[in-house]
Image (cartoon, rainbow, N blue to C red; front, top):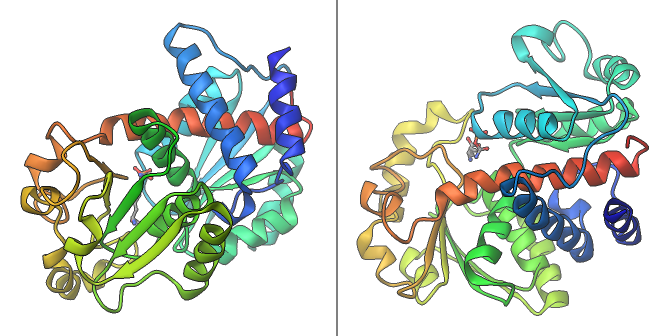
Length: 325
Ligand code: CP
Ligand code: NVA
């Protein structure tokens, strides 16, 4: 059965039990997820599913923050594979308030086969993983958004092939940027990051991305000039200037980030066939203009679709390796 081949490759690649960070994946594990995601996308478009859970499988989906893409793609993906996601908001379970995180983890671990969690504090994911006994997948934290990066790299492969590309990040050096530079360098790309001063990616993430690049043949450059980052790039990627949880900084951020808008003038510095990525939601007219988001070079809707296929691949691999099939 093809499914066993994928599972075998996943186990050979180390089969991480949890995905809290891109650093949980080595380059082979990342490649297995992406290749399976491409195969699943083709199959789903032909009206078939490559993988279905045989045993009753339920995944708890904890969301401390709002979501459109992440919630819907996990729910739809689980449904397509014959499993079920149960959505739990902070209003329902009040993690750390009504009940200790470790106790919630221990309860959920008795009922469900996996946990997907979107949290304010990355450390909460570690606690869930420590006590749940079932795989935990990071659905966005203050530190990383690994599911997003997998969909980003899948989109780049679809549009540009698997050869190394020059990827420009323009904007805030936080969660989405962290996962993107870790995965981009793991897979051998040159990643250029332009942030305002004071919004650079975390030093430990930069150091890890530099180690990845040294191993993969990729490169990592940090700059404060969006023009320098974008010059001759194959991919231009941006994210909101005010992430969830940072709303009180809105006014000052608008000032600091203004020169970092992805608009037609900036995009003109990239290769003529460069693609534009945005994890979404976008604040039209702030970090990206309408003409770029809706323009011919925009790949954002494919990127959003690919959240579905990459997360299905992850769920199939992680949950089957942990005993659910
Ligand atoms: N990109 C992303 O994670 O979108 P949501 O916040 O809507 O899930
Ligand atoms: N950096 C953004 C990403 C949203 C998907 C945030 O954390 O709000």
